[in-house]
Amino acid sequence: MQQAIHHFQIMSQPVTCKTFGHGQINYTFQIGTDSGKQYILQRINTHVFKKPVQLMENVIAVTEHIQKKVSDDSHSLRFVPALDGKYYYRDERRRFWRCYEFVGGFCLEAPESDADFYESALAFGRFQDQLSDFPAETLHATIPNFHNTPDRYRKLRIAMDEDACDRLQFVQKEIDFIMEREEEAGTIQRMLESGELPLRVTHNDTKLNNVLLDPKTRKALCVLDLDTVMPGSSLFDFGDSIRFGAATAPEDVQELSRMSLDLHLFDVYTKGFLDGCHSLTRKEIELLPLGAKTITLELAVRFLTDYLESDHYFKTQYPDHNLVRTRAQLKLVEDMESKWYRMQKIVKKYMEN
Ligand code: GN1
Ligand code: MG
Image (tube, rainbow, N blue to C red; front, top):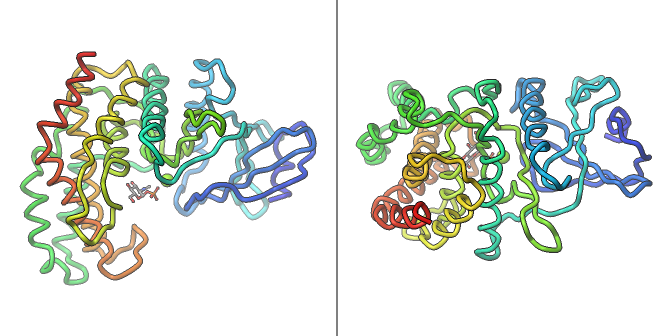
């Protein structure tokens, strides 16, 4: 890694290097230099991201677009070119590196206050807003059909037909629940296809820990981890933050009575997201609750598919882990349904402001 940094156009001498953050996929290092300037050096996990050149094309196009819109350098990522001018360096072992300027800041694993959650909403809302005039169709789909919910149902049906490890017998209740909601679950995808909803640039990993916060003010600086940036619906970015951050229990909680939607946090996030993003259409705002419900149901479908296919996609810690996750997500869907009217009321409140 000390070798890799020398292949980037940094103007000063590297003097320190330590690991940075808690990323599960890429390998991330913070580099200090003799001028005081700091950099982040990352090695991309090419088992997960099989087309790293396309991935970097997406990331660079998106960050350059954002840079034109912000006045402060710390409000967007700034990648450093390699010596050959490309925004990556491939070492002799074909490992794939990239580098960006580090302006300081920290990330949180869980919100410590409403204000933290609000800041993450603001950051993801702004991200959506800054990219509202970006031609989404020019981006590569780094994972095709990632949030195509009907396609996720199709894959579940294949897994049911194959029933590779004889687990179908244990999940009839879950399958019934999922199938009863199939029609509604396809709504957003159908509206994207018909043009009723705009295709936008979406982040696809809108968890709190992907927001860089200012150490002094705790205000959001910018959004990190742009590896899954792809064309998609704003509703799913909103929805995934709710699914993860406004739930009262972890996504793999066993005790289902602990899992519900925290309406207060839903309110906080909705306000932040809309404060940050003024370019959503009326239809998109109206459908925010459906975004939260659909992405939660879709993830349940993905967990259940993986369970039936003997757990090859998501990392599992015990044999029924994916089934436990499925049930927790379905419980959250059920709870959203029971709070549907109140979710819509919250959204309406901000729509009229
Ligand atoms: C995966 O690895 P992580 O936690 O960033 C998954 C997401 C799921 C999430 C559920 C590329 O994300 O879509 O919501 O697990 N990412 C990919 O825990 O499949
Ligand atoms: Mg991630």
